Length: 147
Image (tube, rainbow, N blue to C red; front, side, top):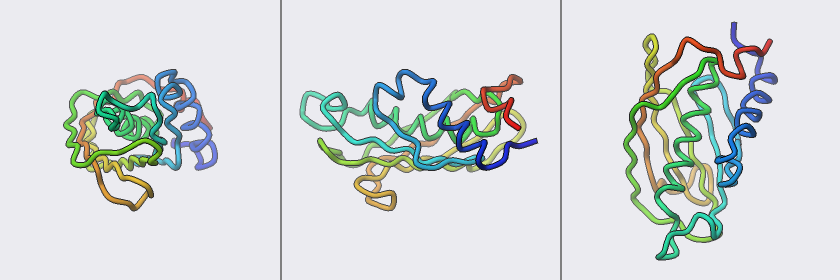
C-alpha cells in the first residue's frame, strides 16, 4: 500500500531532514512523489570551486538528492549503484539550481532514472544531466511505515 499524498510529502521532507549532508549543502525539496522529485539549491560560497564556479560535486549532489528522493518515495530503501553526470554549463554565485528527477523504468529490484539540472527557474536552461540506476533493497525506509 502506498502512502497518501499528504503523508508522502511530509515523509519526503523528513527524509531530506535526516540527511546532514543535504542540510549542509542547503538543498530543499520543492516537490516529490512516486518516481519523481524536484529539489533546489541557491549557490553560495560553500558550493564554489577555486575558479568561482559551482563545484561539480555540488551539482552531482543536487542531482543525486533528487534521484534519491524520487526512488525512495516508494517506501523501500533504494541505493544508487551507477550514475553518469554531464555538466554542460557553469553556475555562478547567487544562482538558483533545480534538479528534476524522473523514473524511466523500474523492473523488479532495479530502477533507472534521469535528472535534469536547470539554472534560475524550474524550466530554465539545462546545465547538467544525470542518468542513474538504483537497487531496491528488501528493507523499508522511513516512509515504509506511513499510512
